[in-house]
Length: 373
Image (tube, rainbow, N blue to C red; front, side):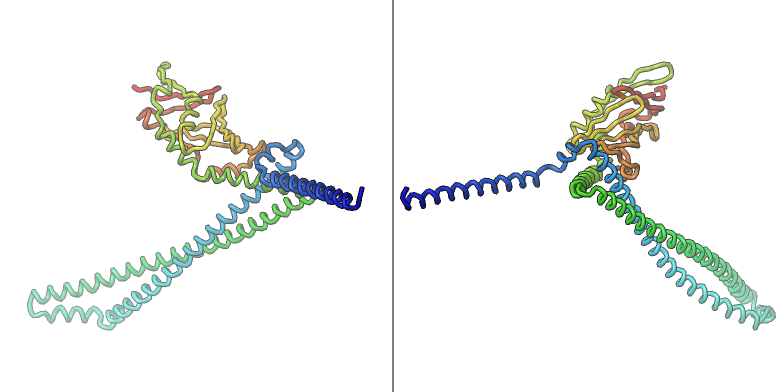
């Protein structure tokens, strides 16, 4: 092969190598991009039993930290409100004290004048009257002066009692404010302690720390989405049932010796939710003694009971729950329903009839109502 041919061959081989290199780099970039863009929820679904146990412990600490954050925020707001009340009360006490001092000064001058002139002076004034009309007029003036003095005394006594009461309340509020400040400091310390505990636990995982930190971030983000979803869900839930086309027939009422019985199926219950355009996908499961609420998209499962309120309102009280199979603490459940429990007002359907009790059965809710007669 001549020299020109060898040069062409080298150029050809170099070109192939460069193409292969670019292809490998592009494939790696695409793979990396795919990994970056992967759904965090999918990665949470695919975790192993071992990973779940570790993540559950980390998530438990996250819930505790969230609760401390909420408590600290509440205490800070309470402290600010009490401080404002103290400030307003101090201003009011100052004004009331000034008014009291002025009234007291006036009364002192009146009493000094009364003491100086004495009863004799008033008697001389009356006796100097030219006629009966003049006498009555002067008598009325003297009586008016006496009455005004008495009213002033009563007013001063009342003002004095209000001042004493306000000062006692002020002292109590200042003590309460100091107590709230101590609680707030303790909450902040506890939050820092929990954060450190979580960080220490992550550090103990050594080479897997970054992996679990990433998983925990995904879980915290997903949990934030659930809390946002539930921010106004109680009101929407009540509205959906209030606007639904449920009828008396859906409650399958029947007489049973001095009692009216009825039931509504979980299918009818879920139908109301499914038809609503605002509520997210939620599926209720009625089991003996327990109601379960599933939010499939968010991997959320809640359970509790149904309680009758005011004779015609059903309150769904959630007491337990899990998120991606991980137990939810009571504080986290309370956070979901901080705007109120799920309520269903049936007064529009049953009128003045009172629901005596409800019992959860397999696939339906059974009612006992007061009789019509």
